[in-house]
Length: 130
Image 1: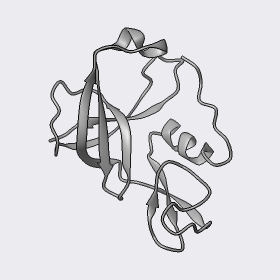
Image 2: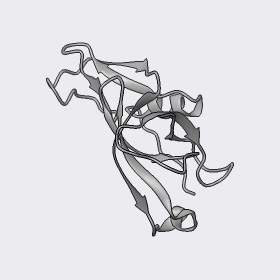
Image 3: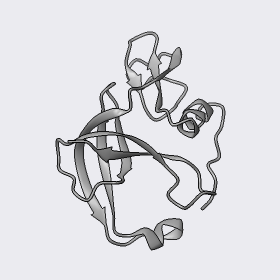
Image 4: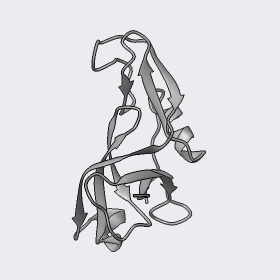
């Protein structure tokens, strides 16, 4: 699997994932939590975004099963992809791991996973806790 190319805006996020943490940004002007990493708040266009460590918990908003995949993920299908509403107020697209069943409204928690083996980059996935 190809490595993650972190830049100045995304490095704190990816460094956190490597440590098993979900790092998000919060706008110092309006207080909005921000994901994906960026340099300007999408709510108020403020430029004072600070990093914080989220609890790593949330709720499944929607999900689907991918029966076909390509590239590094081709041999992993079928797998579950979900939109997770993280408790701090952002929505992330992610993989659901370690869970055979998932439903809308299920509670989930962060599970940093190397989906392509030990040499693959760490990715923020979630598992169902109900």
